[in-house]
Image 1 (cartoon, one colour):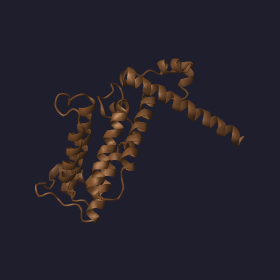
Image 2 (cartoon, helix red, strand yellow; image 1 turned 60 degrees about the horizontal axis):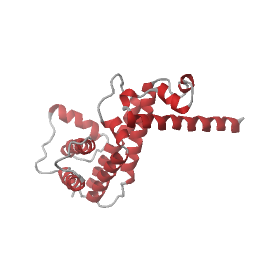
Image 3 (tube, helix red, strand yellow; image 1 turned 180 degrees about the vertical axis):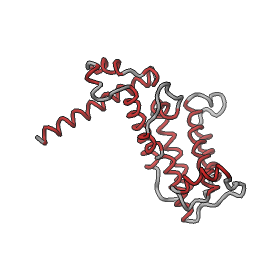
Image 4 (cartoon, one colour; image 1 turned 90 degrees about the horizontal axis):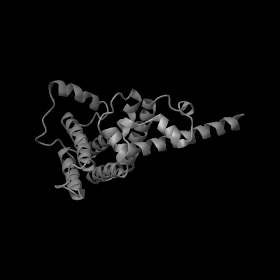
Amino acid sequence: MNAGRTARERARAELTDEIKTVARQQLATVGAEALSLRAISRELGMVSSALYRYFASRDELLTALIIDAYNALGAAAEKAVTGGDPVEEWLAIYAAVRGWARTYPQEYALIYGSPISGYQAPQTTVEPAARVPLVLLGLLQRAHADGRLAVPVDAPEPEGALAEQTKVLLALAPDVPPAVLVRAVIVWTQLFGMISFELFGQLVGSMDPADEFFASTARQMAAFAGLR
């Protein structure tokens, strides 16, 4: 009985992975907006009613793909953590995030591209989405403990609504000064903005290829965040 259940579970997991693989191929050819469970079922030689036993809707499949993408990106960033020199580790994290995005541009576009009409991401995507910023916050926390983090002289102390919003980050990195936490959000958005510009062709004719630009910016953002 147990062996039978294990075999069924394994078969289900394998078919679930096949469905997601074909779905990712669709992302590359027709984009997330046109993702179709019926087209996926045809590709797999399944009747659509059978596929709906694995994913009840397009949105459920999209959510699974989004969670997978966030987790894969987060794992790439976490793998770059060495516990060594904070500036060099910062550069390695930046490079790892960019490397993943360049290797999997369709998955990157799924999580950082245009919103998908009619789709609203559920709460289950929040924790995977937080993995990269948590890596950056963890680095700042460790650098502060080692005396390798200083509040830049031109970093203003957050006030008003911004100070209240910063308290959320203080719960995650309680030793990091609020002014640095605000800058941590700035560099986080800057990282993905820069990657999006590169992947979506906005740097063509200027910083293309973007290798040196990216490396220089990563180092400047480390200083901007107060790492030394």
